[in-house]
Image (tube, rainbow, N blue to C red; front, side):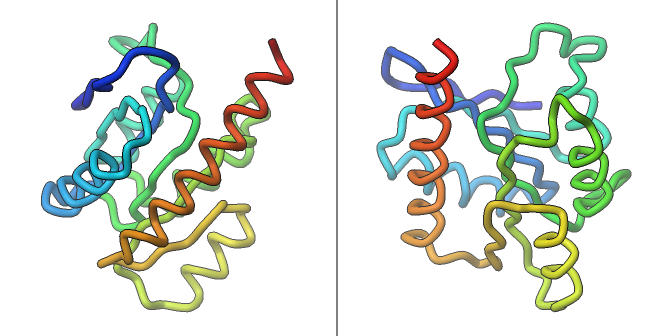
Length: 150
């Protein structure tokens, strides 16, 4: 796991990036840095470790709950669709917004993800403007939920 710390003070958008390709992770992280959204990012290279983080097991006992999960489909150990299925069957985690970032051009992958309630399905290499507009929209939803709870 790698944490990318926010550069500004205040409430950061908690992002969880589950991506095994360091090149793709770097491109995603650079896009997020350029967008100006105050965020903190946790990077996981496989689905199994990401699940440990979400369930706050072991070294992740103090892990923050992510506001948005950025999920690749092709992962070692636990693939993205299996990860998503597990997430959607857990009452405490099923509400988390998930943005799928994938190189898959298989229509059945997209249908499965849509059936599992992803917030967005974006093919890599992604259009940065589209990606950032999705993140901005989800950040707005996250802030609305926090205000309602406070």
